[in-house]
Length: 377
Image (cartoon, rainbow, N blue to C red; front, side, top):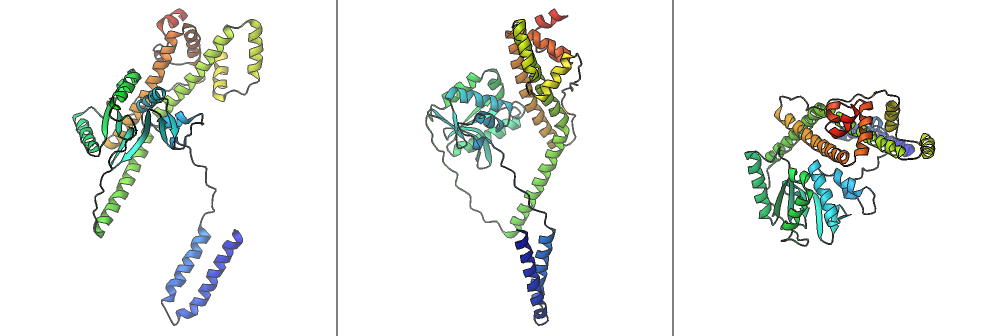
């Protein structure tokens, strides 16, 4: 590869040497000489080629035989409410992935469908639009009017629109699925909607240049907004991720404690010897070692909304990130609270781990039933 690269450079140098005398007769040949010299400079200063990284798998690449296909589809959702709705639909209709679409004999479900200037959360059987609406951006008069205009536009091209509040998805996923089933009475099978007729307008040169400049400005402005919002929410999102990872480790430790407690002394000795030789998760290992030695080495960051900023667009993005993260966190903690309420033995061991890890009491008492932590006082 290097030899061939060197040969091309020498060939161009040789061509330049031939052209220089010709430039005395035809001065315009200097343009070609200048171009060749520039290509040589560009090749010599170009960075070395680096091997391309493998493409990141997404839900569009998922296959039925993949163990994580549902996880990939959930990662494609734009909010915890959409993920909750998707899981309920997969369970109810026994959906399986097929070329980026979820299918079953009863239903074809697409995600993040682009149509004209809009994008739909879900599209069922080719014609039934399903939008999962959070309260923050779908409750004001302006939001309601915007959604109405969008729905009317969609209906003009043969789509039906069903809007399901996120609160219903979280409180009662079965009700959300029932509403979809009722809406699909009109579209029991896959039926494509009518495609809009493209508007044929030929912009002049000045309009094209203006449009390109405006598009570049919007891209740069959006990148600036996104960078500033990510900088403002970084600490908050990191605190939530750490809390969930640490609590999952404490849950695993409580399950081990319960298992050991229910075994005979001989079984406990054998199990502890086996566990000592296992290559366990580093985070869980460190946390358990700290708890067993009564050292609360982990600092639990406070989970509070990021400070407000003056720019309304950046603040809007911060609010969206905060709402989505808190919806997911609250739902996960609610599930953990339900488990503790239903399993008193697990809750007792889990409370012990929470105390030793230094988890804030104000948060712990909202998860573990009062009957458990009052007994420990």
